[in-house]
Image (tube, rainbow over all chains, first blue to last red):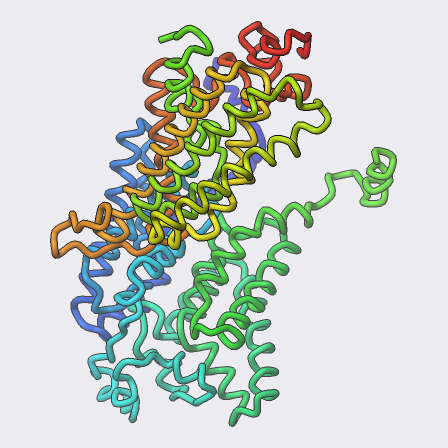
Length: 336
Length: 244
């Protein structure tokens, strides 16, 4: 008898999609950029890309075992966190730094707040910022690419220019960098951020599969592009349009906009809130990159906005079904 | 373990363990987080606060009968500020290095909420000797907490302890622990450990409301329902009024 009547709360309409499938598709969408990172930076990058997710999964498993919690390794969210963190590592970094970061991401940022769905900030970005402050010199030492793509696509003049500084350092000074190289990804930087083309393809794949909505990345990149264009015109840089495109392709903006700002847990739920969230992300990134002293600011912008999500959602609460907004405000006045 | 109330030993144990100002009352967060960049700074801050806390509580308790109720806060501040000034000059004269590294946080002891809180909740209502030992206990609790916090942050963040290198040469200091985020992280973990210990010993984590109050204001106490206005509440006991 009991089996025939299943009593449960809403939602009653279910879909075949599971957390595991979603995570798997995001990981799949990241794969081209990862493979490109390995090709671009060499085998040490591959090592980082393997051990970081492994460390993340292991720390999730061990923590849940010790705390007698339900084992959630199977939903692959820890694996994705580890992968995103690995993609944010400089290619030549010592192996123990991303491992430490993965442990921090899973245990401190995610599990201590209650596990998947409860964390207030993106675990991968939280760990990245932790590492960035903790080991600032190691985390910002970038190496030039191994030149493999140079010969393949015949992109000239990038490898020489790369000894030490990342493209963003050039853009910071208002100088131009090779747009083609930035778009294809044949530049220095962290493992997974360099190829704007492949990240864009991965992001659009997720949009097509309806895993993410296009509005957050579109509004984020759009607002950032408009502000950058205006700034470069005002400051009188050469070719403001090209400069804007270069800013869009450089650094972690593509990775952040498509894969991190759209994280289900740490982005707003309602449409209106998502627009505000993405708009503020664009403004903050612009402030960090073009007004502030540092050359990169995507991760700090996203973390900052993650913390503001509850506030934004509080002010954009949709009215309950059947209650008109006028009535609600009238009720408020009566109360006060 | 239940000790007899308001005896010296009970007061010291209360300040260190049962109502540790940092780990249980979560008071005095500003100096706790800001000055514990090293074990030495933590201990320096803790000891100077402890001395001021003891003397101020003692004096306030002595003059509690002649302070008009409406003017008690200004009177407390005058007493506390006098002792802070004395300690401030003494430290400037005898421990100039520590004085420099603690900086503005020494004068700021005047508005340290542990001292204000204990003056209001305890010293203003109890006998001088009890108040003196309450100050000693609370001060010791504060010092121990700052010492632990400073030690963890210094060892992880700089690889040293009291300025002496204690980690192997290959250890890479995790700089973030000396910076502000590290203070919050370490404090959070230490509070968690403290709560774990208390739960293991069969106590409530944080402040146990049945163990007396911390603010002296039973009338507006949000935890009134938990203690049920028992005679154990210090304020009700001390004033003899039916505050609850």
